[in-house]
Image 1 (cartoon, rainbow, N blue to C red):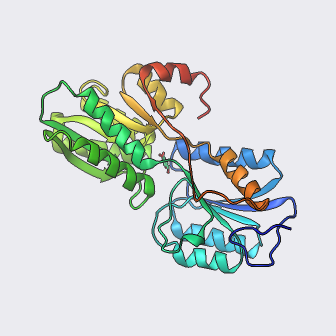
Image 2 (image 1 turned 90 degrees about the vertical axis):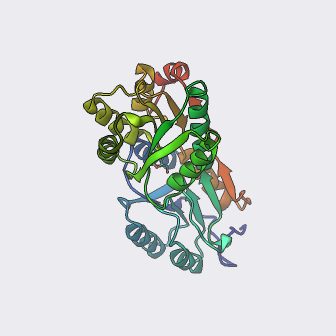
Length: 308
Ligand code: AHR
C-alpha cells in the first residue's frame, strides 16, 4: 500500500471504511451548526465513518476528544480549533501515534508544521479587509468624524484575530475614522446584544458604524440598537461576516448593510482531503475556500436556496 504523509513508516491504512475522528469546537452560531451538518452529511455520503465530538468552546475538551480518538485508533483526526495557541503538545501525541491530522476552519499556531497535513478554511484576514473596504466606500462622501464599534469573536481565535487585523488596516486610510469601542462577544447572539447595549450606553449616537465579526452577534446587536431607539442600517451602518439566512433577510430589510461571506460548508472539502490522503496523494498545506460579499441584490438571489 501507499504511504500516508504524517504516518509512521510501515503504517498502512488502505482499509475501508476509514475511521475519522472530528473535534468540533462548539455550537455557538448558525455558521457552526451548518458546518457540523455539512461534515456529518458528507461523511455519511462517503465510505468514511465519523466519530464526532463537540467541545462546547473548551480547548481542554478538544484535547480529551483527540485523546479518545487516539485510543480508538482512528485513521485520521480532524480538528476545528477554538483558539490558535496551545496545540503543540497534543499534536505531538497524535504524531507519536502515527495518525495524520487535518485542521479545518480555524488555524493552530505551531512551530513544527509537520504536526498537521493541511489546513482547510477561509481567508479571515481578507474577510476583514472586505468589511473595511465596504465601510470606506459606503462613507466615502460622509465627512468625519466617524465613530466605529467592533464586536469581536472569541478571544484568541483565528477569525477574530485576522478579521480584526484586516479591518483595522483598511480603515486607517481615513484619519477621521475612529474605533471607539472593541470587545469580544464570543460569536453569540446573546453576547452580541449585551455588548452592543454597553457600547450604546457608553457612546450613544456617536456610533455611526458597527463591524461585527459574525452574523449572530450582528443580529443580537440589531435588537440592542432598536431597543435604544436607533435604526440599524440607517443611523448605524452595519457590516457583518458569514452570510446566514437570517442575516441575508436583515440585509434585504436594510437593517444590515453588507455581509462578507464565510462559507461553512467544508464537509465535501474535508472528505475529499481525507480520501486523497488515504490514497497517498500529497495535499497542499493550505486549502482556501473561495468567498465573496453579499449586497441587498445578491442576498435576494441567494435567499431562495440558502441552507443555513
Ligand atoms: O470560525 C468561523 C467563525 O466561527 C464564524 O464566522 C462564526 O460564525 C463562527 O462561530
